[in-house]
Amino acid sequence: MCDKKKRPKSNAAPKVCAEISQEPGTGVRKDFEGPTMKEPEVDLEAITPAPPVDLANLSQQFLAERNVSFVVQVLVTVVASWSTFSAATPFIFSGVVLPQITDDSESESNVTLVLEGTDVALFSSLVYLGAAGGASAAGPLLVRYGHRFTLFFALSLALVGWLIITLSTKAVLLHLARVTHGLTAGLTGAASTLYVIELSHRRHRGSLSSMIEFARGLGYLFCFAVGSSSLTWRNLALVILCVSLPPLLAIVFCPDSPRWLESRGRHEEALKALETFRGSKVDVSFEMQEIKDAINLASEETEMAVLMKRLREYKSKTTLIVLGALHCLWPFVGSPLLVTYTVPLFQAVGSPINIYVSGLILTLVRASGPFFCVLFVDMVRRRLAFLIISMLSSLCLIGLAIFLFLREMNGELWAESFDWIPLVSLILYTFFVSAGENIIHMIRGENLPANVRSMGCGILLTIFFFFEFVVSQTFPLLTKSLGLHGTISIYAIICPVVGLIPIIFLPETMGRTLEKIEASVLRRMSLSAF
Image 1 (cartoon, rainbow, N blue to C red):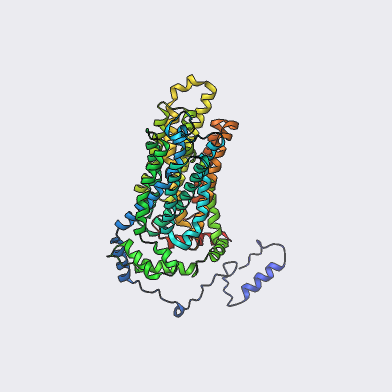
Image 2: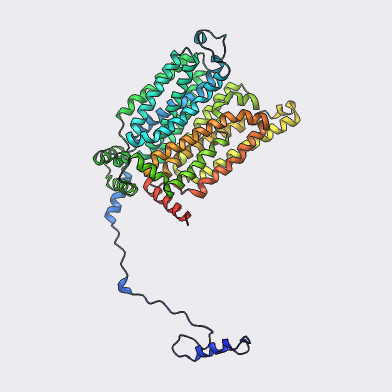
């Protein structure tokens, strides 16, 4: 009932309370001010019962998962990885052979060709510009002709490039070969990663796609080790040409990606390819239906105009922006310097052992990072692992920058007692960066929607290679103006910023099919639009 002592002085409130309390059937309790909450009326007949769980189908799907064949997936991944191995060698080729090709006292190999001045800079950097161009061309080729043809075309270009270097007598021919090798790297970088991601079963996708980066590290190691021997630069090019020939022949016998075949309307071939990758004992109908549903939902057409229209849609465009920021910033953690300036970097920071031995150790460690991912990436969450790797890379660079700053302040005599710090810092940094770069390539292929995966991958790799070129060109200028410790400090600051991008904007992909990942990406982007 209404308490007149607690009521305000206004006359309106007592009147209302009195009227409500005197009105019967209003749901007002006399010992409680205000109406009681009525329970909603539920129409039990309108409730639709949940469909029964088909235990037979679930059991059949579980058994199919257990019987998935791993052999064909590994064999095709080895072929794609070997292609990446071949495409990686040109990046470190210049750093190995420049001492020979710029020395006019060298006989035999340099009798008709010596690089000087701007030719030296072009010989080192043109491969990055060529890679950006190759990545741009990769999208249309992947959409129209598929991963297998793109790899075959890229490897053919690689053989032509090495043949030109072996027979070249003018600097312009060397530059042409370097651009050709850049095109090979751009095409292969897009095709090999997507090929492996699309053919792999979800349980093995992380490990198999990590083999691509592991092969890239082995390519660096092979070129550096063989190039450090007594071989001339022409003979080194001939050796790499021979090593690049087997994957060119093997790719002819590999099946196309089932997802690409389905997108081109070649349904029977897609089913046959999926059965080849999963094994004869596996019922692939569940996975094949998921692929069909995802492709039908994306678009029934795959022509270039339709794909460019898809790229302008909000959800696809937002995904590309997030991944583009990741690919744009990652080179600024300093990763290209480990390839382009391996020997000069050790000359600048110092090392307790021979600088060429130090460079060989770095190339070996660079291959070990992706190998670590091959073993463990399917056991840990991608986003968390990438964040931890970025933080640890930053700590390595901070330690190196502090050492260089104190050496500049206290002199070389003080630094002699701590000359092991640069080598240890760079070894740890190289391991973390190579593992992080492996996760980036994995994230790119997994998060792009099916209708823009090929085109989007080409665009992202174009951004990646272009900014690797920018970092390689600006490193000497930054070092001259800010000092080596200042430049490394900038890279250290950028590392954790890059590590936060997947955590904030991208979904976790571990253990999920590409179709489920795509649905999660689109759902997340739709929520961010409000």
